[in-house]
Image 1 (spheres, one colour):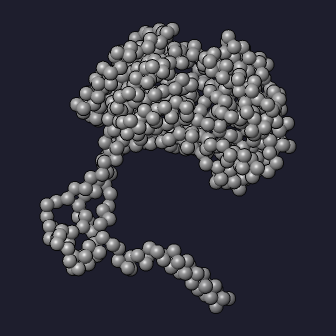
Image 2: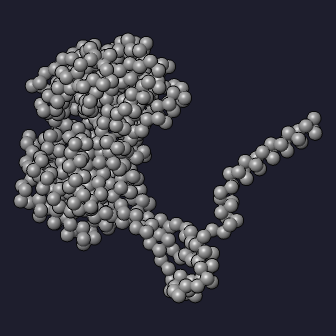
Image 3: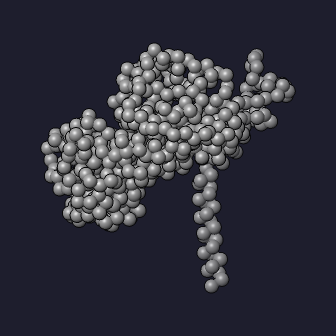
Length: 517
C-alpha cells in the first residue's frame, strides 16, 4: 500500500511536547505493544516501508531543512543522513524474515540429544531512542528502523538543536507511521528528564559522555539496558611511508565533513616531524581546491549548528597554550562560521585542544619521532571511538591496531567504517557501549530467548538426577554430564598431536625424497 504524496513546507520552529502528555504517549505505546501488533511480520514490513517513504517522498524538503540547520550541502546530506536511512530500511525489508527465523542449535548434553534446542528472536518491548543533532535524520531514525524490524514499539526523542529537521520529521511522522506504536517527543532537558522517569525495555542514546552518565543513572532505577553511542578524541596516525597527498585529502574529508561535527571525525593528527611541512602544504592545497580561497563563500562548506556550540569550540582554541594556526582561523559568530583551521606543533597535553573532543573544524597536529611514541601518547587517553592509521606497511598498521583499544579502526581512509553498515558500529569504554547497524541493529533490539523443548518420554533415563542419590546414580551422572577421558585428552592434547603428526610427515617427506635422489 503506497502513501499518497503531499506538499509540505519546512517548519521554522519546533514545538515542544507538553510535559502533561508524555505519560499518555508512553502508556499508549506500551498498551499497543502488549496487543502484539508491532510483532506481526507484515506489520513490521509495512512500517519499514512507510519510514522509507517518509524520507523518500520528501527528500528535497529534508535537504532544505538540513541546509537551514547546519548549512549542509546536498552531497553531505545525502551521504550523512538520507542514504543511510533509506538503505537500512531496504536492508531490513529484504532480510527481516531471515533475521527473525528461529535458530536451531545442536544439544551438547547426552540427555538432550533427541530434544530441540532453539534460540528464538523476541522483541525487547518499548524502546526509547534519544537522537542527536549532527545527523538529525540518520541518528534517530536508523535505530528506529532496527527497532521496528525487531518487532518493538518506540518513543523517539528528536534533537531540539536541529530545529528545522526535527520539526519536519515531527510534521511528517503521523502521516506515515502508526503513532499508536511509535511516537515522537520533542523538547530539551525537562522533556528528556520526564521521559527517563518511565520504565523502558531499552534506551538507545547518541550524544556526549556527560549526558550518557545521567541516562545510565536513570536507567539503573528500572534495570533498563542501554546502548550509548558517544565519541572521543579519534586520532589519525600517519606513518613515514604514507602518500602525503592522498592522506591530506582523506584526513581533510574526515575532519571537515559536516564542518567537523561528527562523532567519528578525525580529532587530531599524529605525524613524523619530517613530514609535517609537506602535510600542511598538501592540506592547504586540498582545502583551497575544495572550498576556494574563502570557504565562507563556498556552497559546500557548512556551519556550526548553534551559537552555543560555536562558543564552545572557540573556547577550546582560545584556551590552548601551544601550537600556531597555519591554515584558517577566520570566524563569524553571528553566521556560526569557523573556517577550516589547522594548528601545528600542538603539545599532546595542551589544556585546550587536547582535553576534550573538538567536534568542529579545528585540526591540531602533534609530531612524533618514532611510531611507538605516538602509540604511547594515544594510550594515555581514554579509548577513542575510532583509530585512523595511514600506513602502507602492514607491520606499522599492526603496531597501531594491536596496541590501541578503540571502538573501531579504519586503515588508510576516514569515516568509511561508519558508512559501511555490514560492520557493527559502536565504542568501547568512554566512547560508547553496544553496537548497531544492519544485522547488529536487529540483534541489539532483540532478546535471544533460549528454548529447550522435550518430550514426555524416556523418563527412565532421567532417574539418575532424582533423589535418593547413590553411588550408582553418581556414576550415571558423571557419564552423562562429563566428557569421556578419551574426549578430554583429545581436546587438550590435539594441538600437540597435530604438531607431532605434521613433524613426522615432514621427516617422511625428506626421507622419501632422499631415497628417490
